[in-house]
Amino acid sequence: MKIHRHQRNWGCRLHETELFGLRAIVLENERIRVTFLAGKGADLVEFNDKRRDLDFAWLAPGGIRNPLALHSTSPDALATFLDVYPGGWQEIFPNAGAGSHWAGAAFGQHGEVSALPWDVEIVADAEDEVAVRFSVRCLKVPCVLTRLVRLRSGVAGIEIEGQVTNESPVPVDAMWGHHITFGKPFLVPGSRIQLPEGLTALPHEAAVEEHGRRVATAAPFPWPIGVNTAGDEEDFSIVPPPETASELFYLSGFPGGLGWYEITCPDSGVGMRVEWDASVLPYLWYWQEFGATRGYPWYGRNYNIGLEPGSSYPTSGLADAVANGSALRLGPGDTKALWLTATIAEDRP
Image 1 (cartoon, one colour):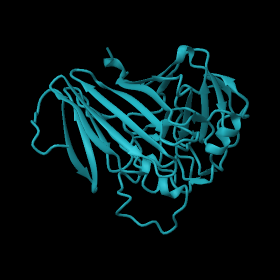
Image 2: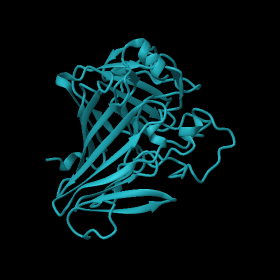
Image 3: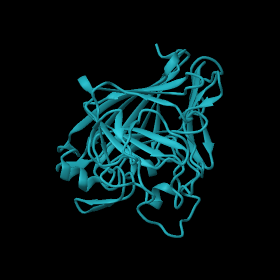
């Protein structure tokens, strides 16, 4: 970013700063302030409703940590991601979920782009609109990703245009998605998740946490009513109280190639609406962690969920996504593109 560009403290504006030694880019207008860690994954770590001082980006118990300033005593495929996981929102590529081996490469938890620094280019810088383009070149696969983020004056939301290109002469298999999480102070018991009608929820094949799970079986069910472990019907669109068992669902069947959800706080009525290109990301992962995990990495401290649009499933990684046919395939020189928006629900146009 240029040192001598014009500056504003009104309307749409952007600036570069540093958080815990990591380069960060802040976009702001009259309604919201959003912050991206360009130095680590271009993670979104702030989505602040300025009228309420309410941040929709969940902050993990460990907060923002600089991976270059820390030394893990036992690095592994899981810890590489989780030990510096800030919460918020990550882009995931080329692996989603647990570490996996495919095409001769060993992928860590949630791939690699969330661990890499991204380049930044200013695309628009005016009172009525600011936009930046983040870009990264992968290490383990021959792919380049770009993410254009746009913020318009008076709008309490962001627009994203994403793109991935295979730069090689051979096909590449991958998982691509956006790992969006919600927690304190926004998420409370009784928060409601609204989705299109007619979706199918497929629970992960096994419990994601050793102390049990919420559903009676891993059989698919019509969202949102399933059967819990007590044998009773339960509305899984309502966020349960603390210490409820952990769970993970894969939701599919978004009509017309349009994915969307709204998550709303019952007390204030304020919420977040996310829309995306379901022709590229046909699945929505619903990760649920309400404090039941007593060991690493959460130790009972969490009350959060993830509502994560993705190209593929399951959370066991790329090899299993290739096996079930859901992996994204990029032919030689191929480019895939998607769009996504996130808007404060009561204020969306």
